[in-house]
Amino acid sequence: MNHAARRVQAVYFTLLIGNTLAASFIWGVNTLFLLDAGLSNLEAFAANAFFSVGMVIFEVPTGVVADTLGRRVSYLLGTLTLAVTTALYYWLWVIEAPFWAWAVVSILLGLGFTFFSGATEAWLVDALTATNYTGSLEHVFGRGTALSGAAMFIGSITGGAVAQATDLGVPFIMRAGVLVVMFVVAALLMHDLGFTPASRAHPLQATKTVFNASLKYGLGRPPVRYLMFASFFTTGVGFYVFYALQPYLVELWGDEDAYSVAGLAAAILSGAQVIGGYLAPWVRRRFRRRTTTILLSLIVSTGVLVALGLNRSFWLALVLLVLWGLVDAASGPVRRAYLNDMIPSAQRATVLSFDSLMGSAGGAVIQPVLGRSADIWGYPGSLLVSSAFQVLAAPFVWLSRRQQSPADAATGVSADAAAEAAEPTGGPQAD
Image 1 (cartoon, rainbow, N blue to C red):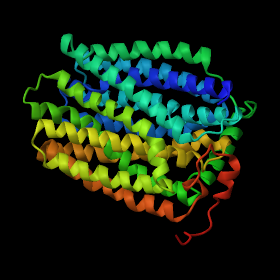
Image 2: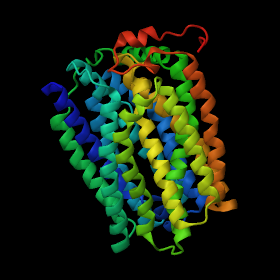
Image 3: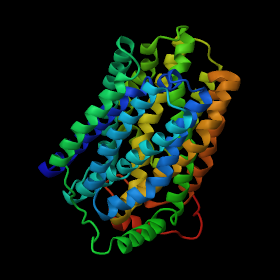
Image 4: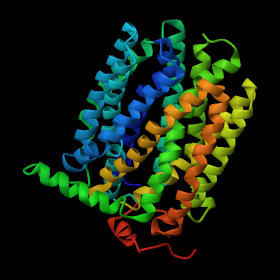
């Protein structure tokens, strides 16, 4: 690997570690934080759903920002927005604000995350192409997954311990502080490579051009479209399960004040993410097609959710949680590489934002339903319902596979020509 490509990866990993560390301070205690503020299960997961609503609303506009003004600008706006809205979340907890206030600030939190989604990944792939990187995307994404898992482990353990020693609000203050630091780091290190922002002389026309092209290369391509539809179910369920595992483990443990046990869920998933991230390239080599890995991970993950719903043992739950995290972490980089290999550079950030939008839409719809199911049948029952939602993603992954896109069997960094080769053919080809 040449020096320039190595430096690009170093910057990407730095940004990824910083973002994950900041976010994970609250991941282990977020649901308990909302419940402590006086919200019911339905209201707590509805607040999370409004976060997803915010992502649905702002995904495409912020993706266009990244494809017109630049990925760096989008990242910097994201850090500032998240720092401010995280501070607002803490303030709502202090004053025990009504639900409508949580809904509004959750939407603004979603705005902050949409500046990140698509932009950082698009920056990486374009910069690697510009620096003549010839390795596989799975290797880079897998290593990034492992490093973010390590940051998540440190952050979630720290957040849970700090909450136990102080109160549930302090991890949110810590998160806002790290985000401010990341703004400075990105301003110094992150520069757009292999991508020229659209002319700012006519921003509305540039926005329209990018948006239309993104529809063509996103929803207009069957293999991309079906993969996006699948994310409606997988991401929606993933949002709920991640946050439901906190009170689920506390309930199995038998002590509702055991905040460190709640943080354990995020810590275990982070450890599994480290291992799964390093396994991703190995898993990719075991199968000729990327969609095989994605489909198998869906089946195994769904089975784990069923087992968690039927389980009543705290220690067995930890084992199942590790398996769930490993499967997700090992298949995630494969899915991301598959998607990126089907998207041209100029529309990459916006198309990736479309993908994130579909997942956020799933979170907005599915989370309140599952939160209500937890009120009625408890967390085990809601996990069983989660498995039923998640299995609905499998047919869409299969439909994407049926298109036989060149990206399904690709092994290197994508080029725009590869995306052009994947033009819709009017129907699936024979396997």
